[in-house]
Amino acid sequence: MTKKNQHQKTKHLAVWVVLAAVFIFVALAGLVFGVYRFNSNNRFLTAAEKAIPFPALYIKGTGFVSIGEIKEDNRAIKKFYESQDFDKVGMRVDFGTEQGEKRLKVTEKGIINKLVENKVVVALAEKRGIRISDAMVDQQVNASIDQFGNRQNLMSDLARLYGWSLDDFKQKVVKPELYADKLAEVYASEIDVSKQEEKINSVLSRVATKKEDFAKVAAEVSEGESAKNGGDLGWSTESQLVPEISEKAFAMLVGEVSPVIKSSLGFHIIKLEEKKAEDGENMVHIRQIFVKTVTFGDWLLEQMKKYSVAVFLQDYQWNANTARVEFRDKAMQDFENNLDVNSQGDPSVFF
Image 1 (tube, one colour):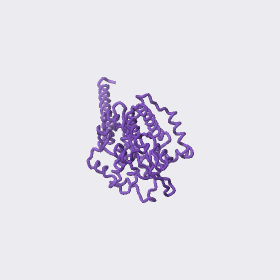
Image 2: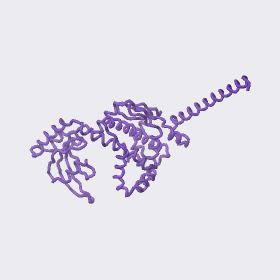
Image 3: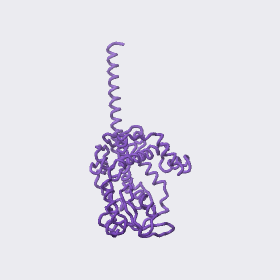
Image 4: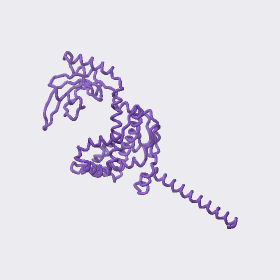
């Protein structure tokens, strides 16, 4: 081969390399544009989102949330609601209409915020030496299997209702919940509630011997909404009360005042006003004096405000004041704020 021919061949090869590079660049640019600009069910884009973890958000210090996992979770929620027979209760699910698509978008926003929260919970937990192993997850799942009869029933229900495998359930639900539970336990041991405890004990000394009217003291010092009504919580079933209060209230005598009760919300003193059975269910009418402590949810929200979050999705933005993703579009914000009006009987709004 002559030098001239070799030079021409090299030149042609270089041209093809450049053309191939340009083609690949254009294809990738088109793929990225499609993924970020279109909320599409296109099979090619869906496959690309599964194969490539395109970032939807970046939480500094915790990592990325991908577009693929957001859409995957949203599809699971959509499948769940569409697999239910709500016609029997006069309700329906229809995500195919314009209003339905907007309601599904609101659901997607909730999923994004939950995924961000899960990332922060894991980061906060691991800073405190908490690690959730696969063995711990398996143990938790095995303990839950009895509720479904057997493993096969659980797997069948997951596939039918959500399109999930058992491993999906472990990673999407069980593991995040275990991290949150363990972090809440550590938080509960760290929080200083001495001032609140001192306050509730001083109140107990005023009402325990009934030397002061319970309703009057509740109106004066209770920190709950019920203080406006002298601490009156009205009638409640066992399941409608905080477990710690429920356990005590249904064991009390009418007119009795409880000792201090500690719950995840704070400290309570309750007075049993009345008892009755209605439609075969026991009910109690109680008043309470409530002294609030900083809950795990309150604390977690304050921790989340410390994290810097970058959002790469065109429909959303990060609100550092609320530590939540919100819609950029004012019309969608208004739609969400009036979701009960815009629900059209869609149960996905309420459950």
